[in-house]
View 1 (cartoon, rainbow, N blue to C red):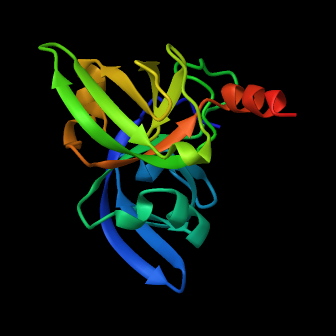
View 2: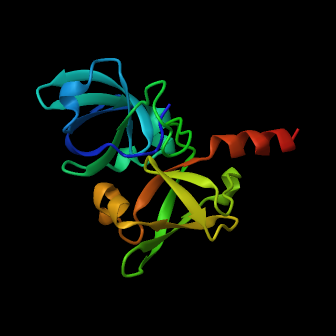
Length: 194
């Protein structure tokens, strides 16, 4: 379980394909605090640490993960949002985030508001995920509040701290991001379909 508050940004140092799996090696400032078998969210995707070597560690994304997320498009030197699993008893500063990406979205617009930014995203509505105005959404692991919610589009307002300390400063039009919709909203939606 995560909170969606990005702890640090890592850098992709190696990518190795093995059958349908992708082994991703990350260099980060938190590597020395990690241990093998620990869960870390990578752009919002919960992956298990399988190897540690000095200031880098390796995780493995399986085919299912590569199909549903943007991790398969990573390249060497790409930046990755990182968050370790929350500790029991810690404050929940973001919202309840599982690290289970529901689908991807595409950045469609970026507005500089001279002190903040509005990012607009579009997602495939056939998967029937929903956003609600002022509800929670996780974009590449970052917990955010939805504004301008529509059937398959939504906006988020980004403050300078989030812009500087996450991948948002690297987004451009057509950047593909990982989305995890609010878990409470998913349960309510499922119950209403019964």
